[in-house]
Amino acid sequence: MLRIAVPNKGSLSGPAADMLHEAGYRQRRESKELRIVDPGNEVEFFYLRPRDIAIYVSSGRLDIGITGRDLLVDSGADAEEILPLGFARSTFRFAGKPGTASGVEDLKGRTVATSYEGIVARHLADSGVDASVVHLDGAVETAIELGVAEVIADVVETGTSLRNAGLEVFGEPIMKSEAIVIRRTGADTEEPKVQQFLRRLQGVLVARTYVMMDYDCRVEQLEKAVALTPGLESPTVSPLHNEGWVAVRAMVPTKDAQRIMDDLYAIGARAILTTAIHACRL
Ligand SMILES: Nc1ncnc2c1ncn2[C@@H]1O[C@H](COP(=O)(O)OP(=O)(O)OP(=O)(O)O)[C@@H](O)[C@H]1O
Ligand SMILES: O=P(O)(O)OC[C@H]1O[C@H](OP(=O)(O)OP(=O)(O)O)[C@H](O)[C@@H]1O
Ligand SMILES: [Mg+2]
Image (cartoon, rainbow, N blue to C red; front, side):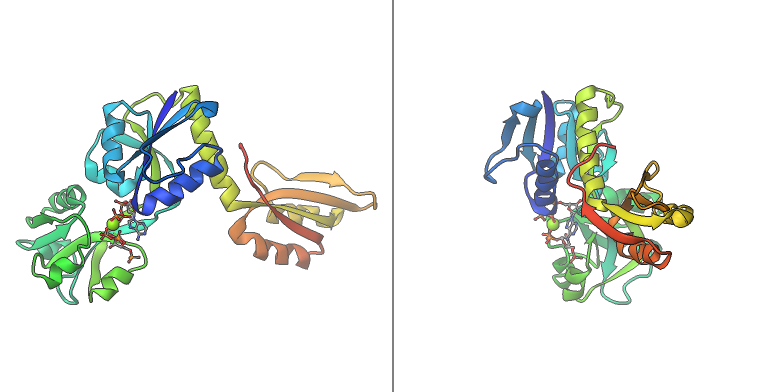
């Protein structure tokens, strides 16, 4: 049975459960459930604090975990990223009152409040800057107003929390994060059960980012049309009953679908349709 750690709270937990559900796995019904077995898929899910997941996975007791890249790095645990999942995207940045500093080099002798002490301490050390780090559990934006620190380092997504606290980011982003699948460093990912799990999640990612596009075009326009819709391997081209016409079918990135439809129309393609992909194995 494959043992998988899933975030039980916070920004990662809802989207992770949605993705696992879309991949065909049973998920818990109540937020108080701490573990469930999915016997049909031979998988057991453990619902754990996002921060603890890398530690459990590095211990080898759980095979796989879903967590944030920033949480993995912060933990310093002996685990590694094997698949990015595209949700809970954020950057990790320094911020302060306007004019406080313009880069990490200005932080010498100052105090930085953060919930990600591991990331911050390493970044300061790598930059050769000697500054103090104060650990807070959350809501770190308030630390400056209340005099606990002059600077914070925190997760930034829309920037709303910083703006509401009258703070501004400064310096280069310390890191970019998103939800990821992790395993113990060097663990065997060739294991068929692990491979099957990863393929299912990849299938969900593809289904979320691609649509299937069908259209008819004249044979003379086929090369131009195929250049617009190269597909993942190569598009399917079938003859139509009307001589001189073919039907083409290819996967296209959802975000480009409307532009591609315009371009196909402009070169004479017609009956251009897109359909959602619900699941796939590449
Ligand atoms: N507003 C946000 N937008 C996108 N990702 C976020 C946001 N806040 C946190 N994250 C990401 O979620 C993960 C943190 O998960 P965690 O559950 O600890 O934090 P949280 O969502 O802030 O929850 P809480 O603070 O309520 O415990 C990190 O990978 C972080 O980058
Ligand atoms: O840039 P934004 O879109 O505002 O998102 C970033 C904020 O979201 C998270 O906070 P959360 O609400 O989880 O509270 P916390 O600080 O207690 O973790 C994070 O810690 C930032 O504060
Ligand atoms: Mg938070």
